[in-house]
Image 1 (cartoon, rainbow, N blue to C red):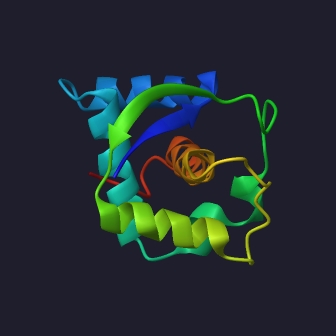
Image 2: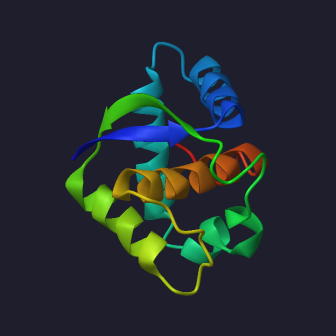
Image 3: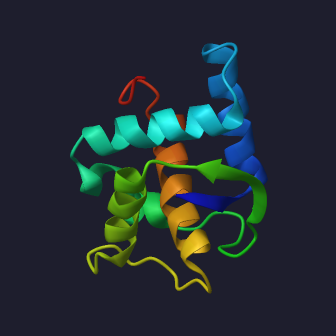
Length: 119
């Protein structure tokens, strides 16, 4: 599934830090690997709970930074997370923005708890 990933500058900084840790890895590969690793934790509340989903720097301040090709199962899992009524995500205009929101939550989680997810 190919889509435009909407990120904020803070998330691009997280990706840059992760790229330093995993040299020779592209932005897209970093995102895909950490999304897959986060999904494999099987603990959505830990990653997407209210403390993680709260907006920082403006909910709608994200911009499309790059296109990403994601595994369809991972994409569908993120879609299910977004649609889960337990998490109080803001409404977005497109599915790309909704999936991007879940990825921003994963990047926030990885930034705050770097040892919790490994690739």
